[in-house]
Length: 213
Image 1: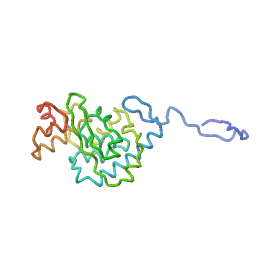
Image 2 (image 1 turned 135 degrees about the horizontal axis):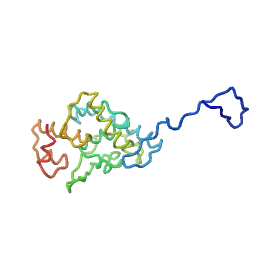
Image 3 (image 1 turned 90 degrees about the vertical axis):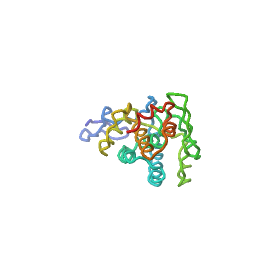
Image 4 (image 1 turned 45 degrees about the horizontal axis):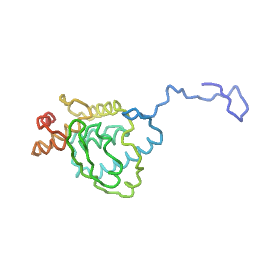
């Protein structure tokens, strides 16, 4: 609490004005590459989050996500939902998320993913549309990720704990959990290992076997 004179007003020593402590004001999230994020970026991202949450709820049957993937999506914070949903939908790595363009989402185009670890190239089907006016109202400059990489990992860990999800000891990265769940689901459904390898962007089938639990 401090006595501060506001311009244009008569000073009264008995009136106290609460001044926020800058050190305690929540900072705007940072993108995983250290790019500064503005309040406007966060607001645009919240609208994108609203769209994807509705998309997820309306298309859960056709999306056919593994059970624990849906559990995690149910518990992650709002600003982490979009990157988590896209990781689940595309089965890509976090570093490959930057390849997803708003143009592909708004215009229902399939998504091309170049593997960040090999020369493998795969295509992810376009998002099934259910509300064109909302989809086209999304700002094309909206960022898909407005939280730090560490924040995203921490959010997934907490969501797994809240949802009592099983731990995956062979997972090298927390954000790979969606890839592990999808590979396991496809394998249990009898899908050929080569198809699963292509889905994950692997050139070696033995690598894919490490994702099956």
